[in-house]
Length: 114
Image (cartoon, rainbow, N blue to C red):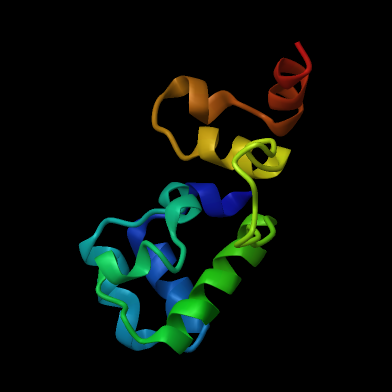
C-alpha cells in the first residue's frame, strides 16, 4: 500500500501514466495525495474539475483497482453492512495523524472483531 504515502506530485504522475496528463493539475491544485485517493470517485471528480464522463469512469476504475476495492452497487440497500473491510480500512488510513499512520490491516481486522 505504498500509494498511501504518495504526494500530490506522485498522484499527478500516476494520473499522467494512465493517459490523462490534461488532468494532473486537477489533482495537484486540489492537493490530492495518496491518502485522499480513497475519496476519488465519479461523484467527486467534477469537484476537482474533471467533467468528461469517459475519463471520469476510467479514473474511478483505476483508483478502485489501485485501492483493491470493488465498485459499490447502485442498488445497494442502506440496510446492508457499510462496505468491505478493505474499504473501511482505507478510509481509516486516509486520515492524518499517528494513529492512522501506524494502523495496519491486521490490526484493523483484529479491532473489527471486538
